[in-house]
Length: 503
Image (tube, rainbow, N blue to C red):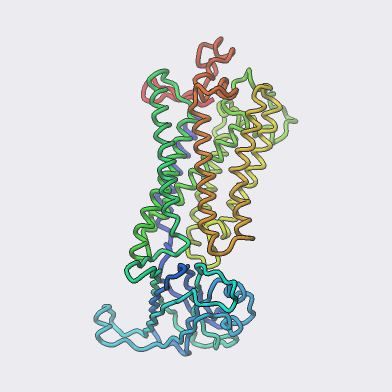
């Protein structure tokens, strides 16, 4: 017991420290940065941006250099359907043939007034371009259906290709601002694919918040009536709270972003971390319940671990009986810590791809793909755990675990399948909202079902009649003989006499 308590506290403290330290290293999606063109890197992609149907894209691009640029640089705008072809081009010159707009970049030395205005000691070389993008011009194809498009802003110098200049061209700083001008009075920094996200985040925030409050009330009732609450209730409540916080943080970030085009990316990073913690907890709960956690010993038969017991069997026994191990690191705490660390690290890595021009949604980049592979693998492991548990438990629970396997597999495999489908068959402009909507539906559904699982003491299901997560779980024959809460039941003491059940 003491070891489990220390392990959980260590994991909590470690997670808190990680959350505090990560945002300081995040580079937010910005409208500024720097680049240097060379013979090996003759272009730099600044940003991708989606302009709405019937709207115009307004862009201001400022370049600054300490020394004079030796050649003539060019600004190219590519539309998403042309960008796919452009990326396959072998040379810089071939690629530029697919550009929809071409603007020559001319650097001029700043005047004395500009030097005083910006507070620099010596003049810089400056270029400033203002563009109005009309993305929905008529197409030659009569069947063309207008839609919003992604536009790619690229600076290049094809004359550098194959040449080794010395000294190298100077490093260029850039400042970019892009707007969606829906009308003369309606201008927003938001890309078109993000227009519906506020509505999705608002719905999930209120739904997850309601689940969190309901569980909080249920825990309060249990504490007043019996003084005993299973830790699973706290875990589901925490998952719902993290999901609520994730949506709230993202809504606040998007509110700032609408007005300045930058947003508050500490909020955006905390949103990603909160969602990662929610995913880790949901994943963990599905796995350990599938392994038989919370079932009493007279309902599920667990053989003693022998030398010839397989590794999978040892892990499943450890997940089903976390208090049976005297080791600080056991399958139960190891899985919780591992999932939490993996989700946080992948979320942190994914933040660096927020402005990745080849990523149309948050799971199309490398860390997102790794996350989907992890989720797929955990789904296979959950199916293995459910199969083993059905073999060992009473026949009355077979139907429940069959339904649980279906629900769990939908959560584990749903998002990877939807992501693959979107990447393969869905148009560029529909991928981001589709993936966000699918993820929100799966997450909200899982939280509602898990809250029903841990909170419905009077539910008629066979699982609720025996599980330690509900008060009816104390009514098993073994626990009646042991004196109510079970002679071998493991608990934490909380607020004096209050007990948090762990078995």
